[in-house]
Image (cartoon, rainbow, N blue to C red; front, top):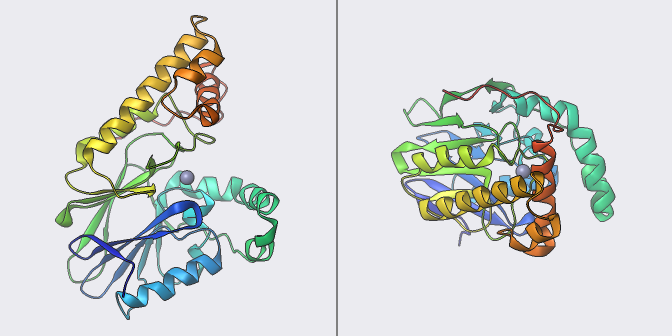
Amino acid sequence: MSDWLEVGDRVFVRRYAFYDQNIGVVLGEEGVLLVDTRTTHRHAREVRDDLRALTSRPVSVVIDTHGHSDHAFGNHVFRPAPIWGHVRCVTMLRETGERQRARLIEHMPDMADDLREIEIDPPDHTFTDRATVEIDQGGRAVELRYLGRGHTDNDICVVVADAHVVFAGDLLENGATPYFGDGFPLDWPRTVERLTGIIDGPVVPGHGDVADRAFAERQHAEFVTLVALARQVHGGEAALEDAVRRAPYPVSTAREPLERALAQLRGELSGFAPPDPA
Ligand SMILES: [Zn+2]
């Protein structure tokens, strides 16, 4: 009995209740590619144990879709496997990793011991626009694509072309308001538009149900609406409270996305604007 969902030929997703998170696996002839590593070493070891339902082989290559704790803090458990991520995923983990850990300990004191034992271990294989990662000598490979800023400045997607599956990381989130706290709301619609263009089968969001291209298009439309509302507030044509009510998210969660978009409109977001990907 396995709780892995096969979403394409030897491409699996397992959904973990903690953060309603999706972890991906692509099997090669011998190699095992893992997409994201969860928040703690305990969580990562759980993934490693759960993998026994699919293969007796160890993880041979890891992808971090971005530098948030729930996607990268389990990395160290899978060493000595090479770990791939965007070059700014490394920056994010180096510059904000301890802050992310401190915030988690503050919000989840019950998990403090697990959170303290994490060895933050950023990717050692990086790229800027795209990279091809071979799973093993058997010829199976995935393509990593950076499509622009969105949920962070370092989101990548994992394209398993031979199985028509795309792992979208947190560029898409199903069943909950996307997290905008480190996001670039003004860039996000165009990035998801690019993403939508390469979806030709199941798309796996970082959190929530496995979805499809129509879902990505709906989420794109929501990002467009959010930006339009923020521009109205920024231009003095609407009150923030009015925009919160009209936003495409529940009222209780719509303020953060709007405030983040307003901050970007005011030029307040830190970091540089990377060039558009090729
Ligand atoms: Zn995230």
